Each structure stands twice: as structure tokens, then as C-alpha cells.
Length: 314
Image (cartoon, rainbow, N blue to C red; front, side, top):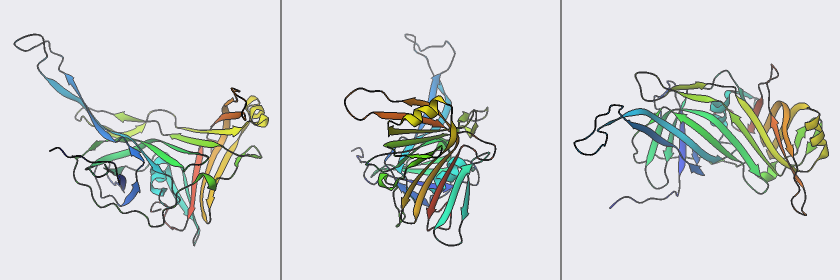
């Protein structure tokens, strides 16, 4: 009888590679919300006109490309997000001689070599993906919710599905909740948010070369981008800032006791501002900020404060 399993206890594990595509053990684990990580093998017909002995069916095919990747979603946490932010942005630094420590994550010329990711499919088997890089990430939270992190992954390949390892999770894991949010800072004013979504795009591309059907280490093929979308109860000043092409930093902090998760979008401008009226309710305004480099700050900085002295173990 075929195996039947469900998504209960699905999890995802990470290990830092020293050589791209060489799998390492997974020591950093997070419970999953969802995952679409998979291996995609593109098989196409050979171009000859030869057919079988009857009819007009082609006789054979070949592997054009053997790709892996997809996306996964987890909760944002004050204690268990540092390793992933380092591999998203590239640079991780820590200040403070005692707890709470401040860990800052900023854009570098490149991200670290790669990650090995183990995708544990609930009560079923696990699949190990090697040579993983984060192409993009979306951090999002709405009033009443928990902040989530959705990572888009490009991977070199994956191994055959086997029984999973033994995931271990942080005993001090603390999710980032909507109720921890402060006001958004922009152009010397502050605003209450209804929701927010921060999208960081690394613009990586699959690189296929002669001699291999899997991707070489993904590299940037376009400009990086940082986009912060928020919803507020309508504010005429924000619309005026949009019209007047104001540029300013955007700040937003989530605070839970000594723990903090801080977002700073640098040198931003408002690319959209809309406040349609469709009923008798409170009018809401949707805004999109685009981060830019100013020569010193490279578009975005994410900062985590916690009681862990390491910027990547947390």
C-alpha cells in the first residue's frame, strides 16, 4: 500500500555551506507555515524527425535542465531569524558587550556562499536541497496577525527523498506580533499602520553552462530592489509628500520587552499613493515606498535585538 502522510510537524532546516553545492548538516531549524520547494527536471524531445514504427510519435527525449527551488514561509522571530537575514542581505554585524545584543543586517556586494536546506514534509519524507540562495524575501504583517517571512529560493539540486533527521527548535523562540509594532516614521512625522509588507529582491538568475544540467551559483542579473507597502487610514500629508517627490528614510520598530525587530528603508520615495472610496467606511490609503542607495546606506537595514551574542545563531 502506498505511503500516506500529512503536513503535521512540517519543518525546515538550514546549514551554511563553505563550498557552493556541497551539502552540510542542518543545525538551524524552524517550523514551517508552507513550502513549495521542489526539483524540476525539464525533459524535451530530441529534435530529429525520426518516429516509431507506426504513427508519428517521437522516439526519445533528453534532460534539458535540472533545476531546484521554490519558496517557503515561516514566522518571523526575534530569536531565530539572524542566519536567514545574513544570507538574504550579505552582511551581519553585532554590537554590545552584554545582553541585549544588537545585530544589524545590511546589503553587501554578494551574499554568503550558499545554504543547505532540508525540507521536512510533515509526517512524510525529507528532501535536502544543496546550493541554495535567497532570490527574494517578503516580510509581512497585518493588524491581528504574526509577521511572516516568505523566502524565494534558487537551488543547485536536491537529493533523493529520505526519512527526516531530528529537528531541534529554539526554546526561547519569540514571534514578532502585530501588537509589538510602533508607529512608522517618515519625513519627521509618525503614522499608525494597518498592515505592512517589505519586499527585498536580490535579482539572482539561474546560470546554465555546458557540461552540466544544474545551475551554477546564482548571481545578480539586474538591480536589487527594496519595496515597502503599507496601508493607513487616509493621511493628506502623505499624499502631499507623494505629489512633492519627498525623499526620506522610513523606520518601523517592533518591540517585545528587551527584544526588537527594526526596519529602516533608506532614502525612500513614494512611488504610489491611492485612497479610493467605495463605501461609507473609513477611507484607507495604500502607499508604496521604494528604497534607494545614498552612497553610504544601501537601501535597507534590518536590525534584531535579543539576548544571543551571535548574529547567526539567533
